[in-house]
Amino acid sequence: MVRGPALTQTMWTADEIARLCYEHYGTRLPKKGKPEPNREWTLLAAVVKVQLVADRACGGSNRPTQVTKEVVSMGTGTKCIGQSKMRKSGDILNDSHAEVIARRSFQRYLHYQLHLAAALKEDSIFVPGTQRGLWKLRPDLLFVFFSSHTPCGDASIIPMLEFEDQPCCPVSRDWANNPSVEADGNLEAPENKKKCEDLGSPVTKKMRLEPGIPDGVGHHQSFGNQESGPIPPSISGSNLTTQELATVTGMAPSGAKVVDVYRTGAKCVPGEAGDSGKPGAAYHQVGLLRVKPGRGDRTCSMSCSDKLARWNVLGCQGALLMHLLEKPIYLSAVVIGRCPYSQEAMQRALTGRCQNVSALPKGFGVQEVKIQQSGLLFEHSRCTVQAKRADSPGRLVPCGAAISWSAVPEQPLDVTANGFPQGTTKKGIRCLQARVQKLETYHEYKEAASAYQEAWSVLRKQAFGSWIRNPSDYHQFK
Image (cartoon, rainbow, N blue to C red; front, side, top):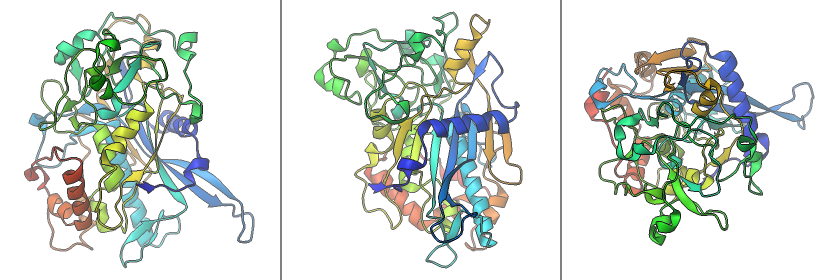
């Protein structure tokens, strides 16, 4: 694995990153697109630039440095569109989960920074690469990815220990036999079920911390039902075979019994082994590729756990921007907000499944991304909203809108619903024509990024062979 910059150990903490993102959400994003008070919840994700900046007030080569942290992209959202609503015109966004929106906004930020570099602006994050016409990232900065909740899919399959408190309302255990309750990749809490306890109560505040874990992170915390939709334990772990228990990620603390797992609404892709569906801790099979569910209509969107794992090998820039870059743009760290969380599950989902991938093209590699959890709760998370609404009538539902924000001067903000209108723009494709000639369609530009496509081919062959790929005719727009 490729290790990130050593500076990550001292430049930031998980709580600093979370607090910065929450403040940005509260002050820079409009009310339009945010959840309706006491009725809706949403997910939040962002990319934070962390940079060492020399103090210009002091002369000489040994000037003291300070660390600056800036949110450069942000996204909210919980929805995906089903197969039947996909369009070949390229004007609809299939996946509007917050993590995906934040990454797309980050790509827009990178695109703007490349324009600054080409115009020889000193404040660009890029400097000339060794190959003429290509750019590379400045060595004094890095990027941290933040998500208010554990990514859907494999990272959300978390051991539930016998001694854990359950301060947030659980999803009905009928869900296991009634898939119709799933909602766009995240389970909804049924009405009139057990209410969340006050988030300020002693039970909620009692976080079990393990020694040596930074920023108040407990490896096996339980905050009950939030976006990942855990199901309360009903079967004792003692009924499971040794092999079945081995499928549950992580090692439980000494003497603790794994009685169940938090469950993900993401479904195994065709060709994977599939979940056992057995009661208790053996319900899920871990380490598998999964797709996000929708209401009735199956989606083609891979889970956020799978996408983050892919970005950790191929970079966050995507295929198009590789025409202009010498190396991929990798995340140095991932920070998760306060929610059900397992360090082992996160490491397995984001890095463990790809750790043996080899023979990648020059510049590409499996990154040893730093993973931490903050103890700070997102104000519009499902659990927070549920606790505040008390006995308010009606159901608590996911917000239907998605917000995209990018640190660019022109139209930094976009609020969408049902996938419209955000998509790859024609302007964004045309900007590449100065470098890549005789190409017309989005598909052709992506395929022409040869090193990126080679790396993607290696990753599929060695780790993600069942990855769902949209038919090429959905990428033929100009």
